[in-house]
Amino acid sequence: MVKTSMSHEDYLEAIVMLGGTTDAPVRSVDVANKLGVSKASVNKAISALKEQELVVQPHYGDITLTEAGYAYGRSVLDRHRTLFDFLTKALGVEPEVAEVEACQMEHAISDASFEKWGAFVRSLDL
Image 1 (cartoon, rainbow, N blue to C red):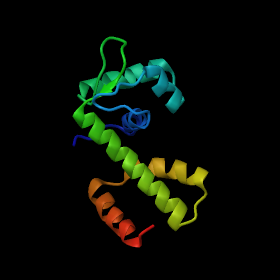
Image 2 (image 1 turned 90 degrees about the horizontal axis):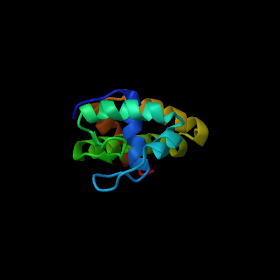
Image 3 (image 1 turned 90 degrees about the vertical axis):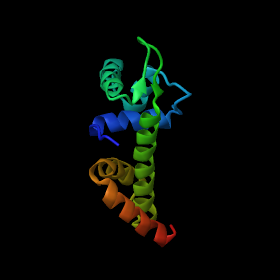
């Protein structure tokens, strides 16, 4: 999978969180509200994601993920949830802090390291 920027990963994650799939589109305004950004920022990010063939959007229409975009967005969301659960359940980090830190960590850890870390966490049976 080709990597995109942390910011664009956040957009893909938000689209998945809003229920976006290859069959279920989401509205730009909902993405803007979810991320706390302007609609113009969403349009700019979506243009870049269209160039990477991760989303499809007719001129100012709703946003639909491609197969690759959905897989990428799910991956980012799964990382986030796994990291959040580990921080809160295994380490006792406050949820508000864990939310911010999981978001930062989900972008920084490599796929190979995350796989190994994930196997370790699963062995803990949290």
